[in-house]
Picture 1 (cartoon, one colour):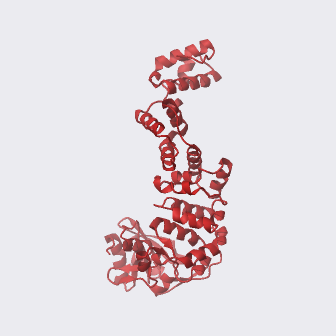
Picture 2 (tube, one colour):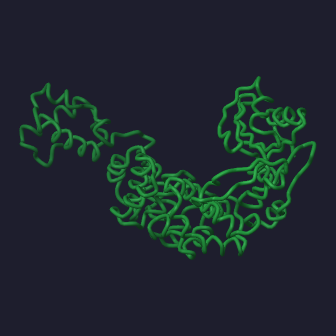
Picture 3 (spheres, rainbow, N blue to C red):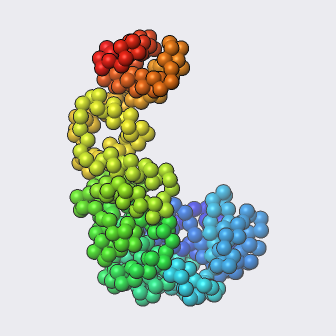
Length: 401
C-alpha cells in the first residue's frame, strides 16, 4: 500500500525527528479494501506541541490541542495529526471528559470504534492490526473493538455509525455488536439530533442500505430517528435504484408519511431549511403514480421547477410513474417549453401597457399560462397580447383561442 507524496511528507518529517507516525482509520480501511481514500488522518507519538514545532514551516491549524489534534496543510491538502491517546471517562454518551497521551499506538487503536477503523500503516514500519480489522474486512463484518457494550456506552453515535458503515461497505453486523447496538439504543436520546440526522442521511445514500435499515427497524432504533415512522419494504428496496443524493433518497424514504408528520420528523433531524423543503416536495410528488397527457407533463414541470428531474428519478425508482408520462416530461424538458410564468413571452408590464390593471394582471397571466401549457406554440408576444385583450373584452371567457 502506498500513500500519496503529500502524506509521505508528513510521516517522514515526524519520523525524522524520532517519532512514530502512521496513517490511521478510514484511509487504511479503504486501502485494505482496495478503494482510493478520500482523505488521510495521521496518528503519532509526537505531542501536539512537538507536532506544531515539527511543522513550523507549514501552515498549521490547532484544531483540537486539548485532544491532541493539529491540522497541517501539506501541498494544500489538510491532514489531521493526532497524538496517540487513551480516552478518559465518557459522561455524556458522546465525548471523553479527558484524554491521556501515550506512546503506544496499540493503546490508541484500542479506543476506536470498529476493527475496520482500528488499523494503522507506515510504509517503512509496516501494518499494525491488533484487533483483526483486515480479517473482518476479508469476512465482510462490522465488529466493535473490544467489548461492544462499552464502545456504544462511551459514544452512542457509534450505533448509527455501525449501521452506516454496514450499508456503505456492504458488510454484515457481527452478532455481539448487533446485540449491543439494540441494547444501548436508548442512549441515542442523548445524542444531538443533527448528528443523528447526518449519519442517517449518509446511511440512506449508501449503495444498498436495505439490510441496515431493516435491522434498525427490528431493534426499534427508528424511535430515536424518525419518531417510529418506517416505510414499507417495497419503498426501502427502491432506495438503491435512485441517485445517491440526499433529497432524493430522503424523499423516497418519507414518501409514505403524512405531510404534517413528515414536517415534524424532518425538523427533528435538524435538516437545513432547503433540504427539508426539497425532501417534502419530492416525497409528496412521488407519493402516488405519475401519469397524464403531454400538457399534464408541462404542468408537472411547472409545479416541480428545479426538482423535476429529482422527482422523476424518485418516482422511477419507486415504480410510480407511467412510461408515456415520463417520455412527455423528458421531451418537454429537452424542448425547454414554457411551464411557468417566468417562461411566458409576456409579463405584467406588457399587460399594463395595454390597459390591464390591478388584480386583473395576475389573473390574466394565469389564464395565458394555462393557454400556453395547452398550446406551447402560442408562446409569442403578439399572440399572447391579442389573447389578453380578448380576455378582458369577454370578461375572461373560457375559450380564448
